[in-house]
Image (cartoon, rainbow, N blue to C red; front, side):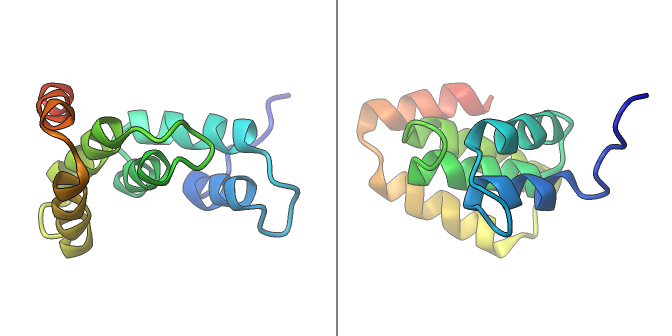
Length: 106
């Protein structure tokens, strides 16, 4: 019998990523989060962007963070906080990182 999928994979993933009520387990958190992000779950994409921009449970990678935020913004174009995150990230990136971010986001 397969285990039931959590109702909210993002909330479930966050418990493990941040160690909320459970022992922190980055691998388990990312295993829950990444498939949701790959299936265009905007909340999961935003969380992936946050992890890459902070370097939490992932290597710090601003172009990859930018890509996840940009994908989330396409799903939810009126999300002001994602717009702000993108602008903040853009300001932190070097020119080569910006070029990579643009390529990754296409």
